[in-house]
Length: 262
Image 1 (spheres, rainbow, N blue to C red):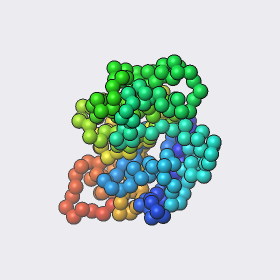
Image 2: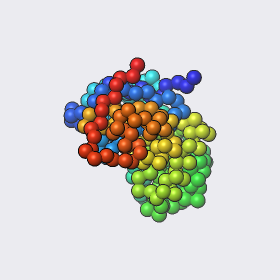
Image 3: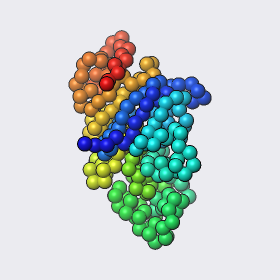
Image 4: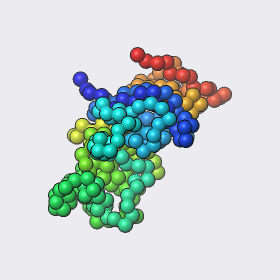
């Protein structure tokens, strides 16, 4: 039986005490590929920022392997942050550093390993994302897909058990996006990494996700949760069904509230 990697409890996410999403509750199991989805501007990336501790919540808790990200301070918080890795939508690579130097940076900052060991580990991470040939390139010299892979390699530098990916397929052509999907599946299968992915790319969601939650702007909450292939076939909520099947209907039907699941 899988252990729970992340528990989100009564999370209200927003800025300056103004909630964009309210009272979110969901669990993510270890080794799962979990997708947070929804329409543009619904608050997907905002929820992710709260889950990684980048923004304090208006209310609620986020537990990473049983430890509360919201209340953790000092050394306990640093230890908790090293259990997760984050690849932002833009890649957020340092432009003055080579790809290899970008991967080495977290190892230099958070370990006491000698330089040769740090470089070896960084090269291994690049190998995992099939980017060995780009080690000495600068970020501006990389294609969009290569930047995404480099960002994932850096996120894996400290061997986190959980990786958060914000819109990994954004701006990529279909073939590059499919290649990135395969990489995520391979890393999940070979390393047992738990993935939390923010996206609205339906093909990627269906291809890789074990479970999803769907956020909606008007209700400011979760309107659907479960395996995406099941949600795609479930006609009980017309808004969710139309979203997954890309079939908008006349009248723009309002999304319904998700009933609390015990």
